[in-house]
Length: 259
Image (cartoon, rainbow, N blue to C red):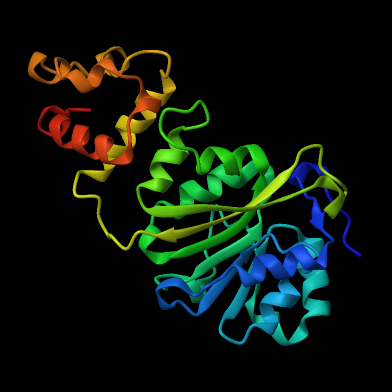
């Protein structure tokens, strides 16, 4: 059996009903038929994914011991079991392909996984994943709340996010010290935001890195001209703007952006 490794933040799901519920939450949204499971661990979720003949499932895990175990447990799927770090590589068979993402994400790198997916959101139309409850709540948070942050805005710009259900620590080996939750993300089917997306992301990050300040003060390092810095919308703080308002502000700022 695979040992959970603290340095990898591993907490293996042991509840088979929850694994089935996660699998059933995958809808094939937008017609994808390939799935990548990130961090399959001991394969509790994997076994149900492989039973679903609507999808072809790939697995990627950085843990050599897990990879060895998965090859033994699912020999018929060996060609699709990849040892590697998803943050640094996508399985060759899925490069430039459309695929769904599923997994019990390692809590310490869950945000980094989303930032990678955001590099090419058009390739990943659906994500069903288990996260630390607090992180899941942040991603699904509404504007004007304390939990609304950088990833809330960036993900909600491309995805509709559903908070599906919560999972207690007793469902894992070893049990984590926090509660978990499962969320589903489905693309909004718009390939572009209608603004400069690089500036959009920089604007969102700059605003939230100074979230106690008004956006006018948060954006001072960019030396925006008076005609921009006098905009009423800049009287507000970063967490008070919707995605649509960030897009509008990006369009206003773009002609003067020299960073």
